Image 1 (cartoon, rainbow, N blue to C red):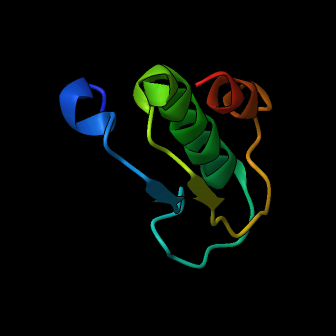
Image 2: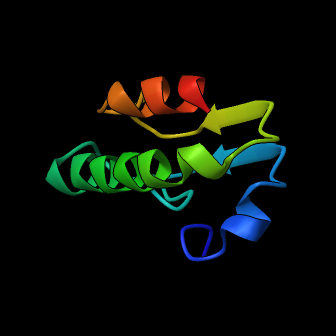
Length: 76
């Protein structure tokens, strides 16, 4: 939704991301793939997150698999 509605995205102040949907799973291929897909989606909307001041990546496996997401968030 945020990708298609940049007029809403620019007002987001806090963003909590749970790439595993809050479900506890063992680490594996699917959770890693989910993390890459979520990180890519955040990279695409980062340029519209003008008001963002709090970002939380809440995943079972810790840090996002893609550092480019952090770079995109810092540029916004």
